[in-house]
Image 1 (cartoon, one colour):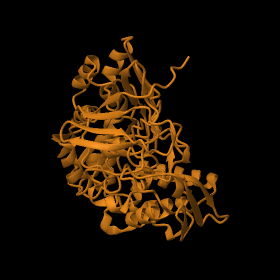
Image 2 (cartoon, rainbow, N blue to C red; image 1 turned 45 degrees about the vertical axis):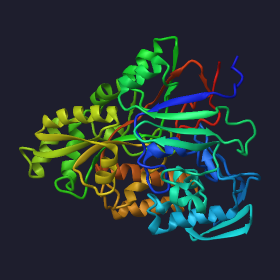
Image 3 (cartoon, helix red, strand yellow; image 1 turned 120 degrees about the vertical axis):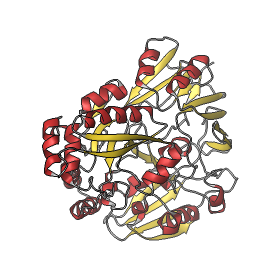
Image 4 (cartoon, rainbow, N blue to C red; image 1 turned 30 degrees about the horizontal axis):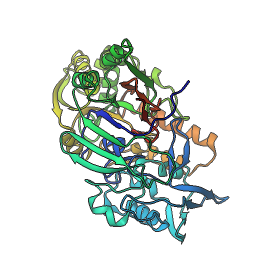
Length: 478
């Protein structure tokens, strides 16, 4: 029999990376959403554990017959952590701020179909679209669409004030972020916990030691596969193995020679043995992917067969591109992510066999975001993209891949405007094939969801359809 929820207590969660800030509307870092989304900040709608869109701050919404107007009715009794009631004006302010280029929203394109926003009354807002947008409601379920209070914008990065079940307490840089139960939360009975602490522990061995010592209750993200195997054999702990939306890729700078040459990119793709990478980086506990879409997505197409490991073909393509002896390049890897670093080291060894000599540089997470994500200052990197349904990033020529393809942009635009599900499925199939055939990046594997925890922790999510650690209904038994 399930243990009845026990209120109270403190839950301590180990996470590998300290967020660069706490504002999900100005940074795409999963490390931000992981802590704040659905805990501190909430959107009009959200994704549940099964990846389904469900209500959040919106009690309900109605869509016009032509799909051009969305009318949202807010829940009653919702308050921000500063005590002020949530109103439709906050929704209008948030969406207009996200659309403002000065805000620096990482995915402003999510809202570009909006024509106008009208506040009907304190609890009702009507959003008119300039064109049909099949992704509109899904985009409102992302962490980037969290509703914020106008008066609290200035301290959003360091002290976020939201409507979530927990409120911000403190951020001790380099050590932890602490949250406390918000007693005026609109949903009766939750959260169960009094306090939640996210501790930054980068080293997998240190994470495991902290769990065994009882210093942390959960290794919430970044549990290494070898640690998962070890914990599964110990009756004192429990391990969750589930699915994620994380697409782990070898990203290449398509705007920079020699990676701007499709023959070079294809050569690199043929030179990488994905099965070997998966075995070495995550102990075989992952599924290979052939394009930038995860198996949780209903539009996923299995394209693993496109590039079988073929170092001989890789050498032929390099010679055709004018590099018969190969070339040297820099492979920059993010320090917090051990699996990606291991993958990078294995890949460097594989590429060396076809004459491609990688100089590996390890960057702190903030440096990776600043130099690679924001400035595209790199040749190659290995990274997991955790944002669900984010294949649209390939339509942005200024994204850090620097991939510029007019046909791809037209396909994404068509998919966004197509409300017929069968037609959308066909278009997204074309999109997946196009970026795979263009070898924009090397598509490695779907990141495994591995969580290790004490036996006293209950109600943890068994899959991760969003990059957030939602502890609203998590509790600890005595």
